[in-house]
Image (tube, rainbow, N blue to C red):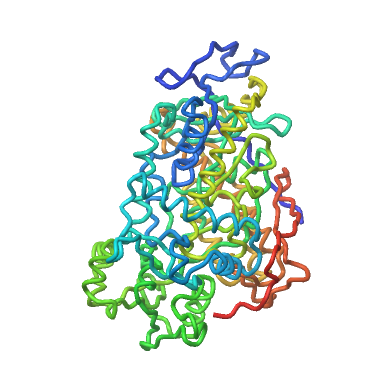
Length: 611
């Protein structure tokens, strides 16, 4: 297929006058049209390791890079938000690790649970590394001050999560992400060589001959952009975010990191696998943590029936998320849903049997969310829920060490695809993955820099197209289309054509609608100011969202089977002969080019998933 449309690289140029690191004299001259005359320029900001993103993976990477270099390297953390506003603070339920093998859990059990949960598409060597590193990260957080919930004997408490055969989700009430982020941020602040650049949105990577050498970042406060030279980079920007109307992500969660890595030459892997969490609060979409089911909550339909016994008789509400979401969709499609606001059908999550004491102690945050946003108290009333877009199994293709195909560039957390999640992630594995590969990539990037890998200088011509796009095409013109209408159309299209169940006809319709959105793409920003121009940032985000949505649809169309979170009505069976493989999407001007690679299978051959 031919996919029309091309979006220019994003970003602008400026000079930084604040405190961080060394500034350099610029060999640069401009005429009034902003065309660049000089042959080369040096960056206006220089760091050794650039960490892009300040969530769990980014903070963990920054700390490890600093520790590895014994605080000698300058580690810059660039984040579109304030650090503690990164979406990782929204994680609620738990962080998986095998802590007490003497009590019955085992590495082998966690490994197999994860591989089976992935519908056997996970790279099994990566899963083994993940499972063995996980306990180290839990205990490291504890040493740094993480307030884990405790058992009566004083040990770290753990709860059950879907698809896990043992209660191995370490938790801190239902505010795990907030406490983990607070612990990491507090620790990072103790390293003087870690410098934070809040509200600096990375809009382009600078790569020459396959080697990373820096980035361009838009400083939202001033409207200036900065050319940042870096010897190594770590992508930690999270997943594709709000590509769907009903989603658990904050509004700032957009696929910036995925897009700029893809445009720089890194393929995106397995982007067709989108996880829909079973319990999004209706009508807001805010996550009701899986811990609510781990503590004993049950799912019921409009008739009051506990329907999961039909779909996963052994695991019931603690089956993997893909299975529960499909079961809920089926219940609603067959007329057993409850009519909600704006025609939004839903089912119920009933916590009343959990008991008042446990809800107040272990699910206090969920109770507060329900009371404030839905006007109900889960101690006395069931919670209206429906499946909600929550996580992207795919991401930037990396090897087991988190390295991309671009020399000097790593990726960790949800933006990366190692892959331990394959076609479906188990709950409580994601925060662990952020910690494990945050540490791995931070160490690797620091060692790379200390080994003397120095990129070439940044030339002025490399940022000329970036400047032209923002200054001339966006800030310099009135828009033809309302970008917020474009974003709403995009989200609605994904909701209708590439959701829990998919088929070729509807996905082709979705792809056609995306092409039309590209063709009528706005060029211009209503707000022409430079200071805190959120309108400009939103326009850049929508451009990124369209390209990444296209990758998801093209990848999903090409995978003619059902596996994990990718359920096709027209291809209802898993096809291990033709599709036991990872999808790779490479950037071309005509649209994504699809290739495939085999997963790493070390011990467990695919079998039928039963729960």
